[in-house]
Structures are given as C-alpha cells and as structure tokens.
Image (cartoon, rainbow, N blue to C red):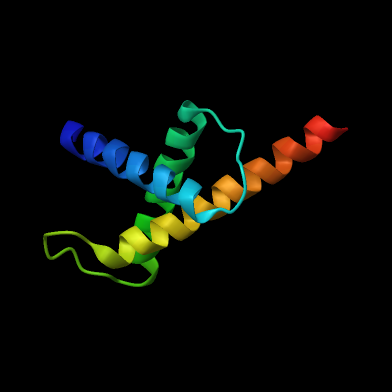
Length: 90
C-alpha cells in the first residue's frame, strides 16, 4: 500500500512536469500545486486507462496510462491557470 502511494507521487511529479511543458505560455503555478495537479492527473488517467479502456498491467512502463495522465494533467494545469489568471485580473 505504501509503495503504491510512493509510485503515484513519483508518477504525479513526472505528469505534473510534463503537463506544464505541454501547456503553452507561462504558468504562475507553484511547485506544490504542480505536484498536486500531477498526482490528480495520474490518478484520473490511471483510472480511465484501467477501468474505462481495460488496459492490462503487464509490467514495465505503462505508456497508454502515462499518455492519458499527461493529457488529463495538462487539462488540469490549463484549467487551473485559466481560473487563477481570470480571478487575478478582476
């Protein structure tokens, strides 16, 4: 159980970093928010890949869940920057 949590945190770090690279422009997001959004993207992407798409866990790097997680993470980063930049302009 603890190992799974550590893996999700590491995957979340990677997903958060990749998501920030995918979203164009400058994001005023702290590292902590990037980690949280990355972990959420990894969890949601893993759920979509395993539950909805029935991607089997056959060991090694799971490319489909990782790609889905990066897309979800990028959407979360984009949504977060859109919401926070809109509220800071008001």
